[in-house]
Image (cartoon, rainbow, N blue to C red; front, side, top):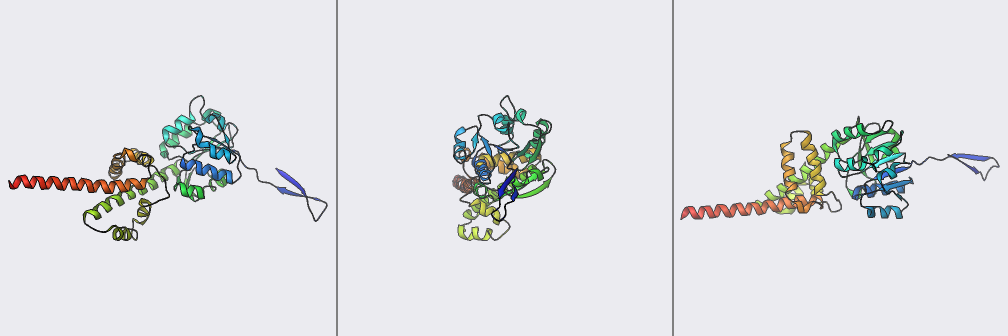
Length: 310
């Protein structure tokens, strides 16, 4: 687009080339999605949003976004479509069906899937897309606080160049390789975080059993290889629901034989009441549950010894 303005220094017009802002459709307004969509509004992109629970879109509408009735309505006029959904099943529900996004995608549209769904699902998604639609898988590392600040790590698989400016609205872009490689690296990284947090919970349970003060133990672990996991286990501003963490570990154990990850998954799913709470609460529960279990085991041993002496 050309913007012709009269210069104050000359009677001749000066020509200023204005950058075209691509129309973006954003599907999925959970805690992460809503924060990321707001970043696009701040950057000046025309934005259409959709979410299954329509009330989630209201703050974005108040900030200037347009709310679509269905996924198909959202993507119809978009240059770029971004999906930020809970998992593979949520992606299929949004993409398929009479009101789904897939059939409404126009040739030349760029689809950025930022959900954590794993490389196998990314490959299936690519096969389901209409001809002429380009797919970039770009899941992210970081929680809601970093999403709001534009400080996420974006793991891009495929060719991110046509959508690089958009991805940079969310944080630092890491090029991972071909389509699906971003999704693959996300599984590796997020499972190392989740496993580390679970290990911190058990390490603290061991420290409690041995009578060590928390301040001493946490301080020592924070100076060692588990420093990042310790920080995440005690995070206050993050919100990564335990249910989503369990989903991510499930994707990993479905992709490879991972006995330790299966044990972590068992621990996460043992506390259904924590499903909507942050992962840090799982570490706390693993710690306290282990203490309770140890006390019960100790009581049984004492009872058995008492019967033996009789």
